Image (cartoon, rainbow over all chains, first blue to last red; front, side, top):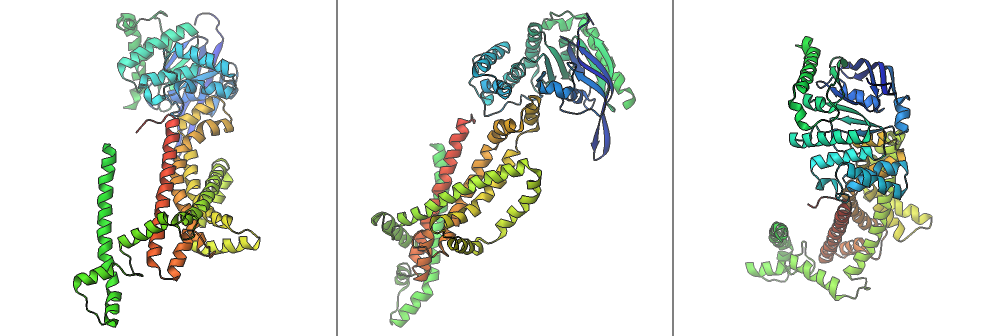
Length: 263
Length: 292
């Protein structure tokens, strides 16, 4: 890593075991990870590798059963209470009875900001995701990609420095996904936020990230961490460069290694 | 226009079928008594005379549709509205206690549902009693409510409304428990990430999510309220109301009166359900619902 940037997320020996009817399931085991400020970290791996669970632990939506984790130097619960992060789900999860504007304003209402402050922030974040002009539309009047952009705006609206994204573009078609990836990178460049991004697409992970965390299942664990050598400015066609393909190959190898003793 | 035609044709053909069947049964059911009358008067009727007579008896076993229609028309449009023979007057008496009971019942149903959703103890302790309450025949409970309330000096509209309440809170409770629990896990997680309080989650997520469930259950509840109000009029010896008309008709074997009171009751029921349906659609539209 470059410079002594303070750790935004720091996990050591983190483990989480779910008690299910079929006995305990180890969703996370011995995860050691430090994420610095301003990083864009992708978590990639097959389903069941615990990538979403890890994100949910950071967000205090799940409690770890062993090890320690801190977010901004606090416990995840304290960080959540301080609204330290914005969370983007797999689906847009907009409230269908609220207009886009009022959906984006939801966290602001909950935080009790003044009307004027709310309006100002809604306008600014909708600008950021290129949704100006759609303030008074209801979610069903927007395409899937626009809905997901609105949900990103909602996560950005209260200016948390950490953005947690759980396969946000998984349900969208490839063209829309490319477009949103490009926009997300621009947004990251402009805002200098720390982003944790769960995906199961290798090109998406390589294109977006400064670091790629490769995970493998049963038990869910980190099998490799790959530093990206790509520059911060990344046009879409960077994906055809040898450098990009080399990183993608490393990720693929890492995924395969995690699978090797499976079959 | 197409939806109008799509609805009109099936409804009218069913209606026509019902009317034809009704006439057939009116003839069949009224024939024995008519034969009896003829024998006593030493008359012999041809088949067509017999049919004509069975459809014009003053106190038939089953009145013919046109007899009911004429009676209904006379008692609805030709009587002064304040006359106690007017169906409008009687329907209004029943309607007022229906609406009062429905308002009580909906409020009570919502309050109970909120309690059940938020307090685990209530969930386990209250629900079986609520279900048990609905298995008791209302005809058995109604007189007791009237008598008990009369003993403490409450008479008139309130006791009847209480019976409506008793019937109408149940669908609202069941619907609202389901509605308040309808938000997706993802939406609840979202509120959790915002560190939203229970109150905020309730008002900003659970309540709006439950609105469609509320209106669906209110449709059932308003019809149940009307039944409650009519049943409530039976043991009170009420002087007015659709229930009172039914009872008086039964005492004096005025079968045509009974049937036209029934028709009045079903028209009131249909109107009530329709009004709740329209209100539901308006609220849905105001909440950004996709036009169907």
